[in-house]
Image (cartoon, rainbow, N blue to C red; front, side, top):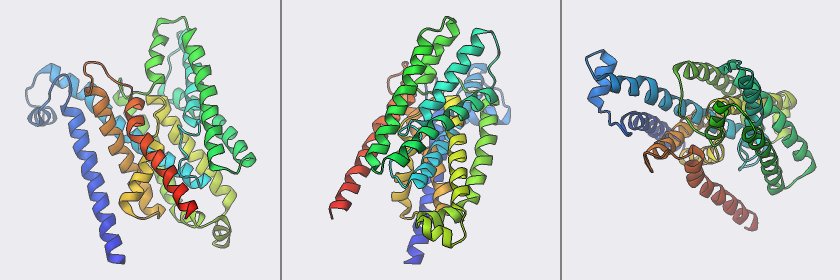
Length: 340
């Protein structure tokens, strides 16, 4: 039994890693301009190649593919932390309105700064998104103390999300600056327009946060078995909860600051990975969730770009198509388990 579980986990990690590599290559190669593997090889080795292909590869597709991989993994990891924190299988940054809160503050900051011809830096957007995420998280935490039902908590999160989205749309609609109209595309979720500077910043923030989350593997494992058990094992519950809130908010902020709110990935990816791994151990689930989220977002971004080309779909439109059925499946499964 132990050998079978170990073999399954190894197979799952290999499968997820191969999936990330394959979809990264597909995202770089497929588009309105086809780029072959030989062209990629020539571009990497510095051999002579069309300037158009070089520009598309290095300035558009590669940064976008890396951003989808990094932010997709961060989104799935944020969802896993929130599900662990609330002991709720359908908790996630989008479902609980945390992404919408981050989007609202980022939009307000961007409108204010762009209206005064002030440059909006990556760090400014992440800090603004973090405050927005923490604001929404605060309301969700207050509601979680008032309601005991899983469905009521989700409804509360959805309502918070709607309020934040309404404020965001109001601000963006009445903005005078022509450049701010582009906020509409960002507010619907998109990996387009990524730069190497943004990729570098998000890589550093995600890597540091991932390391901090991984260090929490042992206390998280105890926390999953119940608060009383965790306390008996010497886990400081209050401190652990603070870390879960802060780390999940940082990851959510990083995602929203660059790609806008992306729906259902934070809920669907952890459960799909859990079904593949057949384990709930945090030390395995944390890296597996990151890889699973990367595969999910790379796949959905590939479809968003090419399904109705040259028209590009919102990434949230595609993730909702694949993620929403997973959420419904989880709810039906839990209902059946309760009736049994």
